[in-house]
Length: 311
Ligand code: NAD
Ligand code: UDP
Image (cartoon, rainbow, N blue to C red; front, side, top):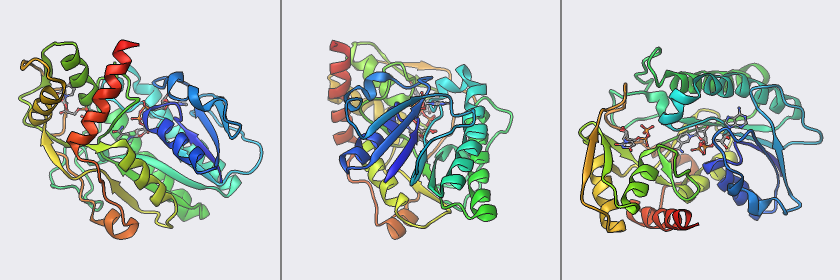
């Protein structure tokens, strides 16, 4: 296949590029490096089947030759970036999704959208199933991300209904692993970094809020399976093992042999209190479920962060 991956120099995107190259496919990696890093793809640049296109996908994009699939992963994704890049996020998920759907239509390519558990907002239903419509504050600080992803889903399903474009929508829950930026701001990199530096771990609020963390390799397998189906409705992809942030912090302290000290800070606006995917649809349709436990995944991630700090 000839696959275009937007956000290919980011955390998830770079793992996708690597995965599909290993399978012998040709990859066009599109990125403007707003939150991505050259180091994530540097080892792929010499591969004849890999091409980097440095451009902003919020603008229309022309690609010569055939395309079999477009995987749209370009968007800043950390809550820290919601405040830093609000307009860029709206543009990437609004204009970007629209232009890429037009490209998929023209090339008769399959289009896969990286959607998110944030479409459920601060959920009133637990665990979250795909038919739950969510609880999002449309004018809150997270809205630039949550609402633009919801709109991206609407665009995607509408191109399928109106033009028959083959689409897939992955609702991705918190995913972690090597290649997350050290200054990314998301909870796992932040806690690991502080623990490795012997600093107190920052906990927002009382730390009793929950998340369910999926290791990157599991997510990539789920995305690959989803791409090969013909399911156009959204599918949750995530690990259903739920932890409080305090439990996560204690596990990271144990694995890094870090300082047993926490620093409690203000909880950001609209921070979801609980999050856990119901993955029965993915299990049934994709025959997929995560295999890597939080402890195993954290060990691999901590090893990687140790190397980053040393270099
Ligand atoms: P990331 O910030 O590491 O990757 C995003 C990439 O997109 C970066 O390389 C960035 O430079 C690029 N990008 C952003 N805007 C662009 C634009 N306008 N033009 C070209 N490139 C652009 O984040 P990530 O965690 O890898 O997330 C990737 C995708 O997966 C995002 O769409 C995100 O919403 C989605 N997602 C991630 C998670 C998660 O837990 N990591 C959860 C749900 C959804
Ligand atoms: N969080 C925290 N300390 C940090 C970063 C985040 O306690 O250094 C909390 C945050 O308030 C949220 C959870 O950890 O409740 C997950 O945050 P993250 O930014 O990773 O992603 P989210 O799931 O909120 O999008």
